[in-house]
Length: 129
Image 1 (cartoon, one colour):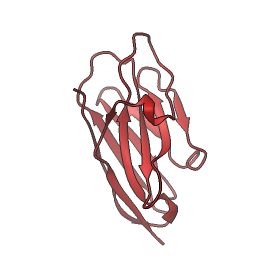
Image 2 (cartoon, helix red, strand yellow; image 1 turned 90 degrees about the vertical axis):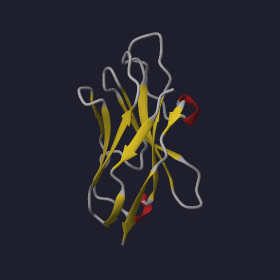
Image 3 (cartoon, helix red, strand yellow; image 1 turned 60 degrees about the vertical axis):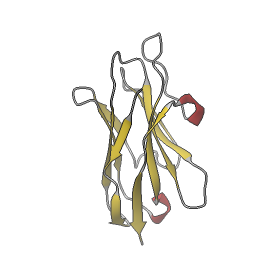
Image 4 (cartoon, helix red, strand yellow; image 1 turned 45 degrees about the vertical axis):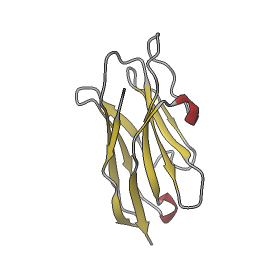
């Protein structure tokens, strides 16, 4: 069973930056993709960004494109979400998610929640105005 663990949340002010990290527990081959989702109070969970582990292909929600670059460090087996110019509307619980392993190389990352089989517990990000 794969586990994913997020870290790096906190309380910041408008315009500040924060970096989230996520580490999946099991790694065999690199034929999977990972993503960040978020859920604000009273709202449904939404896609933020995704990345393919082997080739680093990225996918972004329009609301964060250009502000929240996603990356991964294969040597550290860690994915990152660098959140810049944070706004109060970015306040949410941020979840890390991992897809299943695919039989082919470099599966394209997805923005659909059903594409992800392993989820972290979430880390709170609060942006004060």
